[in-house]
Length: 220
Image (cartoon, rainbow, N blue to C red; front, side, top):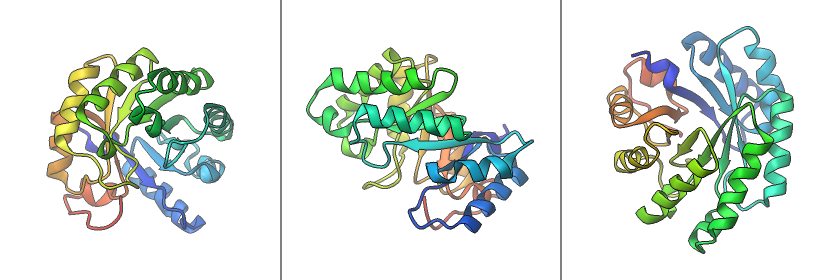
């Protein structure tokens, strides 16, 4: 197993400086991670730095609250792709989930996917705010919207990924979509356990430490 190719090497903090984005991209090139995961304003710079490599660029849409209108999420996704993003991680409309407004939740996902027809789209469920029943329903809607991934968390709420949720999500999407576990993956052993239980991508700011067999003690 090439663990490095499961990792979205992540830097989403609000105060990230240009030199930190450069460091992130250089690490991603050195370790051949799947993608870097960055805020939209850094995409063009990352594209320059990653030119000629196998490292993709993931960016976030409707981040971190998911409360933007669908029109805004669509605009974000389109501009991100124009600037060089290869994958879109959109935050679900969490308030609509809690209201059981399933039409809004589904149409929100469909709109972003329609705006990103040739790009991988992952929907961030923010599981720590949802019931198990809501997680199941959101996974079902993600399949209906024909999204490529369901993702556990933004890393900016009350907790990140846990094994139980990954197993649950995989049991719903099966082989029709993939699961991304994000936030809280801090060791090589836990990363492997996540993959063995259904995760096909890991979102972490500690990718280098994890692939080196060290514990990632700070950050996402």
